[in-house]
Length: 172
Image (cartoon, rainbow, N blue to C red):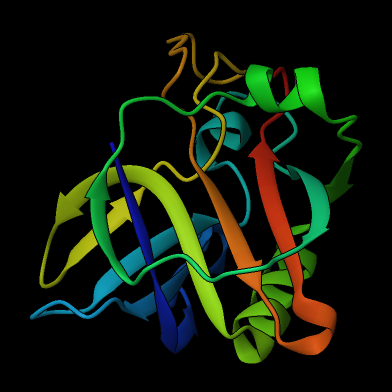
């Protein structure tokens, strides 16, 4: 697992010849490295839909104020678990359709000063992070991974506001 922090350089909605397969947005992060890091953020669960379950994302948002920004870069990460966050904070999850998730991410990426994300590294044309969501077993995925969750956090200049987005699928 890894954590990346930097500035949003580009935001794009996945483009598929089959609209029913569109289930991600991609955020390119300039993290002060030789190459940008691409975040692959789910906007619905393709696997839950194929298994006949609700494909919509459950979005939990926690808000605070920031006093300092995380340093730009890509860092190894040992552990991140929603259970730990949920012990400290009361997280209310709301169910959102794909287009609402796209709008949520687009608005935050357009207005944030810095973005920070936790996930699993991958490398295609550019290095990236995916699995930026709860990794516990869901209605469509039986594998139950603890301590390997991903999330995304947005830092805004307005009121030095920070917003942590936690994503879950049906059955989590």
